[in-house]
Length: 263
Image (cartoon, rainbow, N blue to C red; front, side):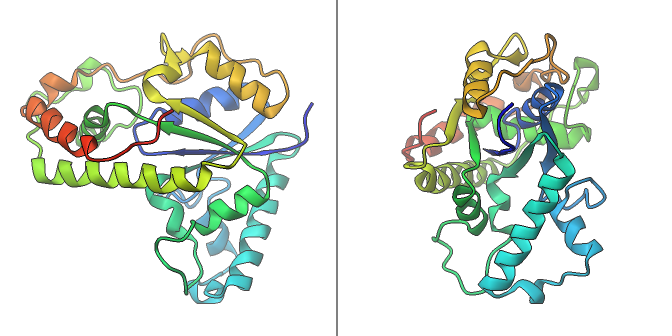
């Protein structure tokens, strides 16, 4: 059994992260705290904002770097204690890294928590989705159905969605820019596993290569579930969104302008 580690999933929404969390938690060796900066789950075990609320910690209390360093260290120690003899598994989405930062900081600097986790020698699992159009549309479909996992064909709305192309393009630009930005600070860091969503899973379950890579990185054998706890959405995006072809063409133009990091 290896020493307790911090495993941090870095990804954008609709990258298969919830399924990965469930699979890793199912091994019995990782304590899944999920998206620690989720603002709708303050009661969830391990929630960062829930942790601050319970202790009456105000934003003004941690505006300075020393005060924030103390908070983050104590919070990580809190997660370690909750995990007991298991590894700590957290998920930080592209757009939530700036949830904790000192007051005086340039926007192009390395995210504060990322630097802290690197100093702690955390293992990062960086997941990209090659098909950005499908990724964005998947989020809109889930939001329209108010269901984020295990979407079945029966759940599809009878009326196809019509999405705003300009907003989709802006979303695609944000995704590509975030990938490049975060990847830059992990480029020389040794404890990073990079995966593409499209090859991360085989028949709905975590691929054999991913299972092997994660086990080796954690330095202990993990017993993965034979069947995935969460199913892939069965809804066909092309028939669920009226202007899907137009969206695909628009997003392809956006992604072509960015030198996206490769998995």
